Length: 428
Ligand SMILES: Nc1ncnc2c1ncn2[C@@H]1O[C@H](COP(=O)(O)OP(=O)(O)OP(=O)(O)O)[C@@H](O)[C@H]1O
Ligand SMILES: [Mg+2]
Image (cartoon, rainbow, N blue to C red):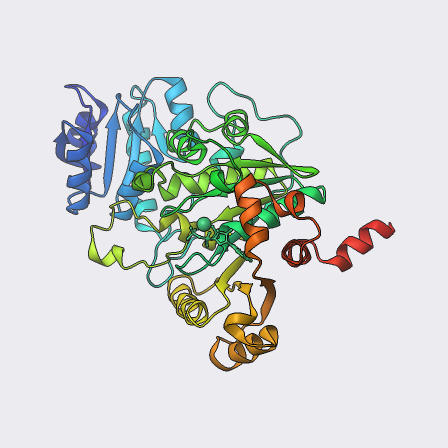
């Protein structure tokens, strides 16, 4: 049976004509004028494979994922070697326009088969991640050699901070944990992936208009992200005795659609190559209902949060320690379990205070959590210290700089770099 194909960028004598008429391997069901038409045709279930002939400049990772979501493979035919390298770096199937038609037929057959196959990222019940792709970042990008001896380099760990709505202190904890780790000698990159209220730049006192993460995602989408331009987009910021690389978030929350999940995955991969630890401020929402409510290929606002939590080596769920924050955290953890059942976060309560928990706030909190919370231990309790937190925010500083002796800093430091580890290191 021939493979139904939609094509764009054709000319009279392109290889598809010969393939269709001579071998019958493919049946060209539609020739499209624009990418939007191609996408619509793929969504309608008309084709198994989309073929872009010649004009491949607009082909991105996002396009490939949109088609993959509709179960359609993508093949790009181009005689431009630079373009072919770019597309292959994105993990896409390519062939030369002037290649033997049998070879092109075989590539299209492979794409059709791959499109029908499940990916390594077996989808969780209510959220499906973009298809698994080879790490494009690890490959040399067009015109570039892989750095010698870089092949076996250890990849950084991803540590994601997440928690329910209500500003429980995700960004405060993410940044201060990152600063403590950097001060202890680790290379740390912070990524602001909050698509609702990005605030890493503000916490650090940066007058940032560059939206480093959006720029990195754009380059990743086009297969143009290199170690050099990622380093440029994530400049180092001094934090006490250490330095943090910072990939700032979108400058206006209505620009969330610039953070496409597939490209974001590549950026995270790049950050892993850059640092020992990648700290992600992941925002709050893990609702995947939009997949049911809208078109499945529409950009999804929560996809970056879901992706960060899915790929993270460790997820920290931050809740506010009061009568509103605790039930919210319980509900958020239930939502998380439904969306990403394999993720088991560490629970941290922030803003622990007597006024809302009584004379023995820590004991009351632990008892309440044991009774009402999911059976997951509390990994840390962080005290409420408004003056200390305000002063740090006002000065755009980390607590290790603005209030090194505060109990707020001590609690965060103990969580980031436990004293038994610190003591062991200083004894060496
Ligand atoms: N332990 C604390 N004690 C007192 N104030 C705190 C503490 N932790 C955070 N804050 C303050 O609470 C406010 C919100 O903190 P933060 O921005 O970290 O929350 P968030 O969960 O990231 O919120 P958002 O929903 O905006 O992302 C800030 O003013 C911060 O200084
Ligand atoms: Mg925040």
